[in-house]
Length: 280
Image (cartoon, rainbow, N blue to C red; front, top):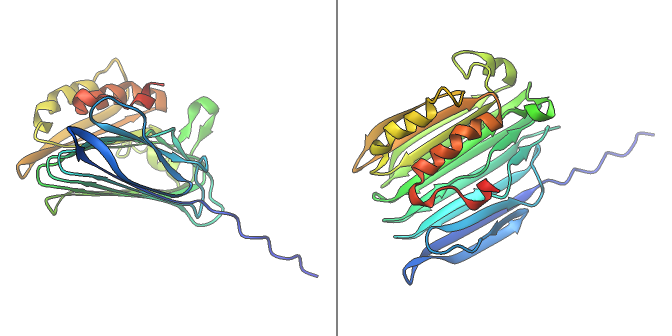
């Protein structure tokens, strides 16, 4: 007699939405929705920007898990979004884990999307989509950093699948689009000089702001500091009445990446600096 089929594994399903707006001279929470493993907490801060911390209570993701985050910033408001910890993507037995992020910023508003690193473990399968919709005079700082394994724990990502898709619009016009896809032989691809030359930690930062051009020189000084190590570069383009600065970093591990990533975020985020959780 054949053994009965195993029950289907439980999968993560989380969605959360936050809307904030300007009221009585500062940014305040207007609406908050949470479902499943997706939670949002708001640390007490004095003045702007409003800080929000995203939490996946499942403690990580694997094949078949789904997370969706939507952040809306009203006219003249300002928000800084981060995560409680690094998101971990574990080995997938079937299917892939997926995260979708939607950011909307009204006229004169600003958002800083600054999650901590995503750690991709061996044989993980993960896809992330990031859609940003900015008003014509809105500003945004967007970061995604990824670690393919943890050298300190003796872990390397050899096989797997990773796909990162960005679409950024300002005033309804597409101003930035990219698709980064790697796999199934992740380790071999990372070794290629045309990729990252063996680096295991990578990060992309995009600043959309009228001040972006003025920050290009200081950003390149941080990225290219030979005493810090790693590789990277930064470029600037005029976009309508604004501009965009795109920076990329790579390093041998997460510690080396953060040595340049932290001062770069502090520079590009202006007076708001780093989210409090980054310094804990």
